[in-house]
Image (cartoon, rainbow, N blue to C red; front, top):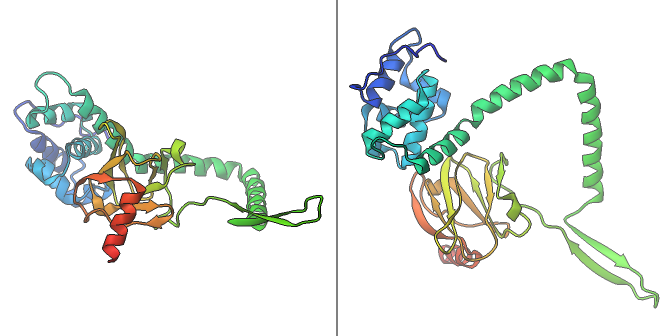
Length: 286
């Protein structure tokens, strides 16, 4: 990964020229399509970085995050590339913009999960091969426990009690269950709200999601990748911004609400009040 560190990165070169030069020279010359597949970033966005056409990429956090990942993949210093890019875009002069840096780091953290998981899985596989017998025994115990829970549990149970006077009283005990998501759950956020959340968001495509309270304070801001879910705090005082509105499923009390916008379209001021989402659902049905 570091074999391109000696590539020319003079101050006269733009970020796009540095990235293109790193990709097309040295011992690891690669087509942009190949790099796009490795990074799971659309080819047109990488091309926009090389051409300096940043308006093609919808959000500043995406531009900085893509540039950081691209630089790391090409063996360049990601901090140097991001700092130079911010200067080109007029985001900073000589200092650093802490807020943009935090957003960029959050994006890199989300976008880099896939590579991190691959390394972890490889190491886990080696460990399991050395201790396979204990994992086999543990797996049998876990499966037996799951089967026992499924047999004994149910979504709704009728509890029958018999008072002293002989009357039989039947009480229904409800057990909450999560929606039947369209995508397998990958990672959960806002779990402190899980017990009371009436609204749950799940990414079915990569999308930046920001949640604000009634005063405009940000309570959650992150790039969600397919399968990630977020439990919205209970109440009617929250609104959302979706960077890719068509890539987010909104569940209201276990029911899938209509999409809040089209694919790859940014939509802001989305009311997350359950009543508002239900009204919108009923309006669309009419």
